[in-house]
Image 1 (spheres, rainbow over the protein chains, first blue to last red):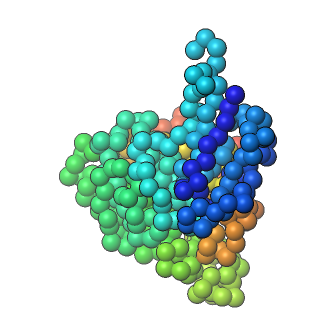
Image 2 (image 1 turned 90 degrees about the vertical axis):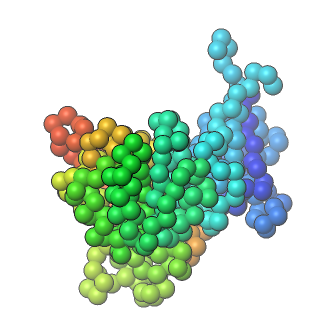
Length: 75
Length: 266
């Protein structure tokens, strides 16, 4: 199963990632980081919808996102 | 969990520290693309980066390569000196539009015309970002800035300069392309463009130039998502994406991978 990990202290809450997610599961959270930005997140229930396409990580200007994908069989 | 692999993580060349850029600024994406291309080409230890004046002045804090800081607009001149004295090194400059298209116009045009074996990454966000959003040569008609509060006027200030068209028309240019950082598709294209502009230097063919359309949410007085939309809706129609010169392509003429959309203004 694919999943994404947000580094809260790097996120600046620009929300560009929310515009590119094909599953539209990324949203703004209610919590602030140390710098006072409202960070982006994927709700726990939505995480299984993640396909690991890495679009969010590609557009993130702050390298806040790491994407994990399931290893294909036989590789 | 053991069957899990990392699909995307920050490239190692990027120094692990938060950038000073505003939320939604595309400099972060441009830095990463440059870093990825340098890593893929195996150039990390042989690169000399020439920083310019502007928000990207601190590029050496984020990219782990040797760097020189040039006076305002003079990055291509500094890069010329570096490359001529150290031909074994890979030399690139990273400049904004206030730097390259305004005060540095003479340097960039002559460096390109001489066919210096350097590469230039040009980030075009249509304003002077660092100094507070003044009008740049690339500011669009009607765009409000601190020095043209009523909007840029064609009659008074002239039309925005299209740099890729100028550089693409010069004899020493080996590769010239305009790309954008507003969508996933365009970011992927931008990476290929950067790679091509770097390769022509490595192959000793000539000058490599890549223009990246990017956003400046703070000085455009909008949020990051709206700024991204502005690139798509206002900037790309005026600054058409595409390859403006590619001497490596068959026939040696400016052919395009980007279909017909780039031919509109030719």
